[in-house]
Length: 625
Ligand SMILES: Nc1ncnc2c1ncn2[C@@H]1O[C@H](COP(=O)(O)OP(=O)(O)O)[C@@H](O)[C@H]1O
Ligand SMILES: [Mg+2]
Image (cartoon, rainbow, N blue to C red; front, side, top):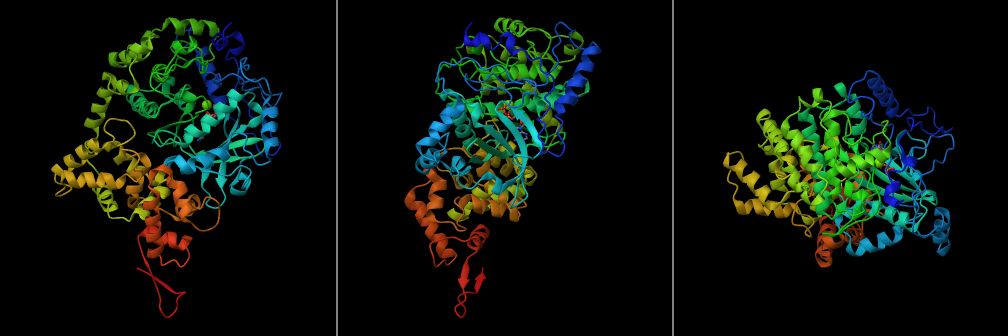
């Protein structure tokens, strides 16, 4: 039996009872996963006989574990826990255990990071960019995470992953809440699994898209890696689907969600990253609001690829895995297949090929996927769904990946176009820009380079409810749904609005200048999500917490002041050394700093674009202007 066959071997049947969270004596109340409710609801649905009937109906499982790369030890640390994850696949690599590898790494030097965090810090000083460098990586065995966050070990459990728990943690200094994914190092058994863990960290560091979860910080202890991520309060798409009337979404909502998913996938593919584990559980809602946006999470199986590269690893989750992945010969279009499966699920509440904890053996699911066989059943349900929606699914669930649309092509398929135009008709203000935001973008051009940089750093500290307006405007300018704004679409939207008289005399040249001023990161030709937030920052309610976090992000080694090195380390490849030195020296002048360092007070002045005049009579007394 090949590795890929093992993906579907009987040992991997998803017959797991709902996940009961570990009975941790330190936890006041064991958190009850919402999966428990879902399980009982879906069971009752089955018993009512809705859907395709017992033989074909596949209720959503209590959990749909990803089949990881070979070698990750997924056995539960608590023997009383049901197995929520598959047997580890046999591996070709080293047979050393996770703890052996970890110990040997540590024996080289007592402060060496198990996954090479120290070398990442070193490397990105040279060639990182602002987005990557904004993720604070605490020097291995530097400040312990417990000093910075409460709840890392006893906070509410938000979810259970293959290699550890995700908990709600609170940043002590600001009270801001985050999700901390704790990865248990003893579960990484092979060199390959270490590589995949490193990839998860590296890849998540470089992502900046409104529909992708943001990694904030990385910590390491002797037994765990901690990924501090922005918190998604709205729960998994998996759970929300189950809360829908008749357990499925309307076409309108489904199209809106699929549009967001495709935008995130297009962005990933454009950066040479394939996700390889797209499924309902890996899309979270930012908030509990009805119209909340989705965020893609979990880069635990992701991989960098170069154009045309073929992958062979057996990874994925049975219900959403693509046929070519089962055959061990695939490229990034396996992610598009998964979007087809998810669309089918969102519209019907059923997986097209089974494999979602239903009664059918997983080998049957495997055979269904390989044949690409699915039906739009039950008829009563699908007869109310448009032909365009069915065509969309049929076009994505094509066996030969060469005949499958790319993410970019999928965005232009009829069904999504149809709903986009309906949305436009319903919301007359859709194409119209908010004039305050445009004014903010225009003013940003006049900021000093240092102030622009500080705005960008600060933009990473804003919480979803602080950027609602900017998110809306970003969507209007991201006309092709790539999650970034190109110069042409920026020009087109701004000139169109100028034409309607709202922006006065805005020439094409002026728009180009505004665009270039917004590109803090000169290494890229587009404006990314956080560059946009930075430029529109004056429209957000910034508070002390944001300022404090931004300062700390710059002062990454906790000195209580910022130096030129901090700025150089943060900008990496995104600035020339001489220009950055000039920018830093100008800032020192602006604050009349007597030492070569920027204190928190100086930082506040620079943020506000103010300057200091030292009182000649009393040099300790400053007047800001
Ligand atoms: N940023 C987050 N905010 C809220 N919940 C989260 C967040 N990240 C993960 N979770 C919860 O934890 C679960 C497991 O996290 P995930 O990163 O998918 O781990 P794994 O790689 O092991 O599947 C998710 O399905 C979700 O329920
Ligand atoms: Mg996951």
